[in-house]
Image 1: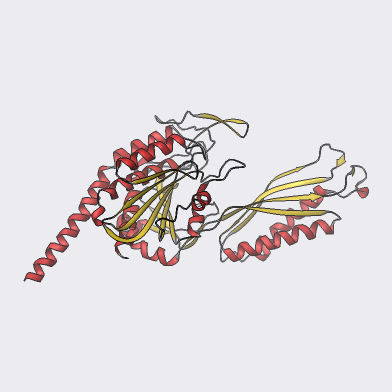
Image 2: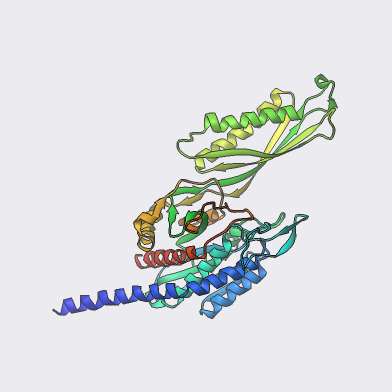
Length: 423
């Protein structure tokens, strides 16, 4: 009888604890929406998120967290130590906006203007980072009220410059790692999410392994020999060579890449050459991107692009060199960790609402964190019910339903507590 009484009290305490957390999550929704509207109305570009960081830091300090500012220029890190020892989990949100002029008719529409790379433009949270900030601030507040239920430590990472730092500057996840964000204390696992305008509210999408692509920027310099346009035989045409290279590069995807394993993309987005209609120019420059979802495919494609570029140019009497700049690695969800946190996601969203997704060829610098520690990154539904046309990310009409954020808080809270308390 005594054992049964103790068991009853233990189960009752667990139930009360869970109900208490759920109540705190529900109660924070209104505040979270207010934060989101503020950030949406006051967006800041990469490495310039000064006021955004200030508001984040003030909130974390009000919760009693240990707070570091100016991490990787404008990043903020909050540390919450549980009452019991254990592992260290990091949760990350990106905080920068984009040089996009908003077209939405919202009461909290962005009216911010700036000059970006010499062009006048608006500034807009056209990728949902305003929701990511607000979700993580809310998660921090909820968990800070339940330190007694935390076996370990939680790092809340608010990362600047996910969209890429300004030319000539460092920034983003790479710089945060360089400055030691995953150390002191050393992080054991990291979680992140991205809200999605084309996924219904209440839905979570995930994938073990590669979920977002590595992003390489490449530049091909072609050297020919200038001549009069009426006498092509007296020169070497770099424009013709460029066309042949572009054609050849696509065969790497269509004939050499095993696309039944993972997708891959090679795109030439810009060609610059020549000055006049009747002059064959001396040189040409091509700029493009490579997207891959498998490390071995990535290695093969880059190797073959290098070989093909040089060989094709030589075959037509010219020279060509190719250089690569890595913008993001593959956003790779550790399969073992993904399996462990899946029940947590299903618990808060319902099994039918947690769906396996196909990988996307967009990139995310969350991938750099995952190269250092195991991580899980998932997509959160932000499309308002009844929407007939959902505008994609990075566009002036991009829109997110505020109601999508609460599930993000539930997911982060459940994943984090389950991970720490099961270790």
